[in-house]
Image 1: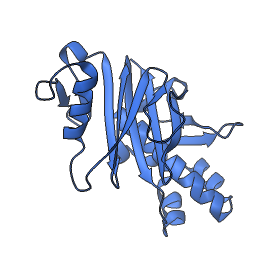
Image 2 (image 1 turned 90 degrees about the vertical axis):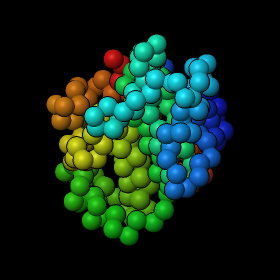
Image 3 (image 1 turned 180 degrees about the horizontal axis):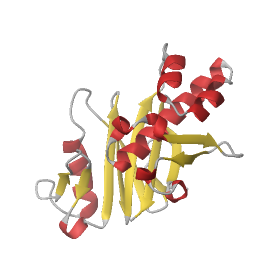
Length: 199
């Protein structure tokens, strides 16, 4: 699944490659992502046909229209993803205390997730919370609306091997089975998630 088991990547998940770069807090991710993408595609950052759709989702056009891309930055790191023939989303979350975690779960998550997560002890709940949150963000970035779509409109669940999978989603996300989800540690104190489906 991954081309590099060490932290920092790049990682390869199916048709998608993800890079992790140092990033200056308080700055936009797009300029840095544009430089990396242009380097990978053999073109100039200033002429790379990268635009935002009406919802703000990044898209490549012209000769690169068959490629999907996206990025996420947080606390000094930037993830950039690029894949062929896919629509993708990527998210990066620092692992830090969330004092209102239970309230967030009860208020925003799918009822099936609420029952599952609140049935865990506190340590297990914290670990799964970050995994679920990060995966939801990645899926909804791929969809295009982000969390304004509604975190309760998709349900994640652990498989027998403890991998998360999309168990159910609202019709706007299509068939849940078409979604590929990958999670990993982008660094010692970060969770990362990539979601994609073929187009």
